[in-house]
Image (cartoon, rainbow, N blue to C red; front, side, top):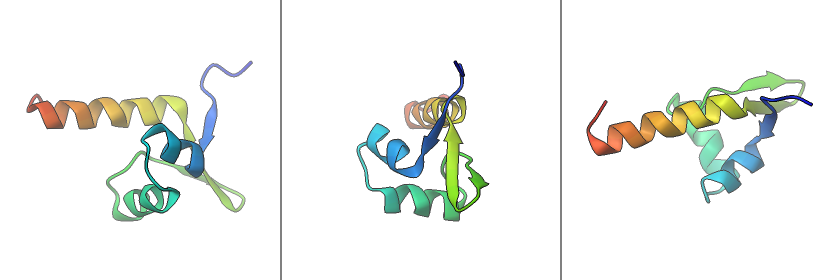
Length: 64
């Protein structure tokens, strides 16, 4: 079992309770979690999504 699974754009959107189009915009603008294009899909490592989430939390709290 993979301890750092891949997530689809839709799964990342669900994680943050937003639309897939928002996650695609974040990626295009360079402000979202780093994704990897595999075939026709962009996938995100679970650890990368969590890293980005922690970074955003720190920025919001002024700790960054």
